[in-house]
Length: 222
Image 1 (cartoon, rainbow, N blue to C red):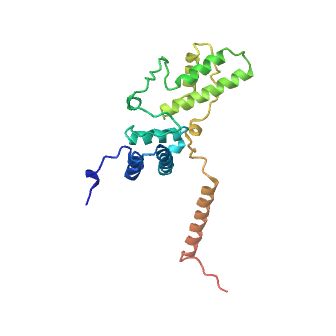
Image 2: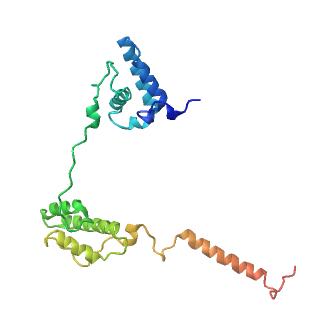
Image 3: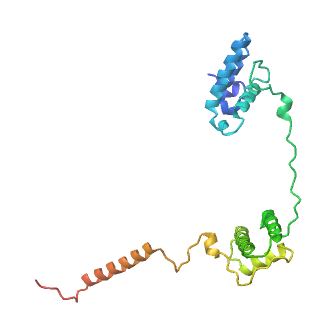
């Protein structure tokens, strides 16, 4: 009995050992045209076995690259894409780099800073005022994502003033979205109507049961 530990190691495990054996068999086909036709068939089988590859835009290109990788880059066929090389596989992608934005209130994010900068250039009026209130509400959401405790609206208004370098102010009586609404909580005093009916019905049932079990209650005669 032959165990997998004694067999050839699988190059790409997603396709399994049978696909790898089929690709190895391709290199034994001497006729180039027949070898190419067989390679197209193997790629179609690979696509059926590895469905998640279809979610990428260049999935067909990836399948042909995997075909050559499993064949150890020794397969000579007329494929639709250039044949990859081992150097391409070992090449590391360029370093993306880190953002160098130095913002004081990181929990609001760079987006809030950019929006506030744009709003500062707008003319004063109802439209600008409405946008500022929306910005303050978004800042409150961001703050609660960073700190789940209750936040004071005055703190949000003060942070907005500081982020705008003192150029934007909202009245101290500005009403922002309630914390419970942002966090998706329902105040205790606002119970659903269905629960109130259930509670009321249960109370009436208990009262009726107490009357029927009362031994001092006179029995009505027919």
